[in-house]
Image 1 (spheres, rainbow, N blue to C red):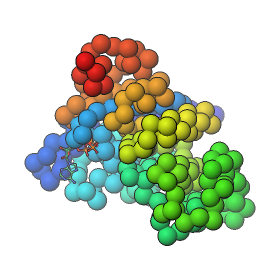
Image 2: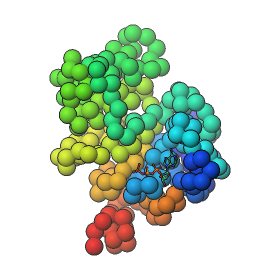
Image 3: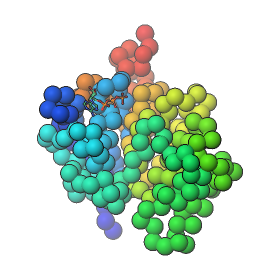
Length: 246
Ligand code: ATP
């Protein structure tokens, strides 16, 4: 059997428009199983890192200045976003951009890229409704009428419709109430348990450390700290510097 694909980022450097050096030699690994968290405050470079992986940097006038990104041994750099999706890497963008005028069911249909035929797509939707029973209740509802938490579930479910082997999540807890953040964390755990690797970008360090096995903290475009999440969540330095505790 083929070895399961892992994401390897080596010494990655990214600039915007020449002047802004957003990533300065970042190295990071997401194994084929489990959840890896990428933490850091505003402007640390988290979104830039996801864009470099998903092939969406050029849309924001960003460019890779050095380093390498591979998935399953093949380079992802300078590929079209659609090629990255075809390689099994799917991003859920920040701000849960669902199609507001479309129903929940139509949003899921829109995510079914790569499914072989009608029957495979229907089966994929059925699986999503099993994983997300709340979405099954809302299947005929227009997405813009959903709560923030429900929209985040829908954005994740839509991404899963493409059958990714690696899911990239950009701040899924942003703007959600603590109780809903817990639900999102549960979903991340579920996705991982079903065999999809997750790279979870978060400002909510407590949530991200609770749901991940390994974590990296970005600061001003560099990896400032990395280690097993259980260790980082009890480290005094982490608490002071990055978890906003005193
Ligand atoms: P946030 O939590 O705000 O999304 P982040 O950690 O994701 O923060 P990035 O969005 O990756 O950080 O930004 C890293 C740096 O790159 C910041 O200094 C930011 O101002 C800059 N930057 C991001 N996008 C662009 C762009 N399109 N053009 C110029 N500079 C940019």
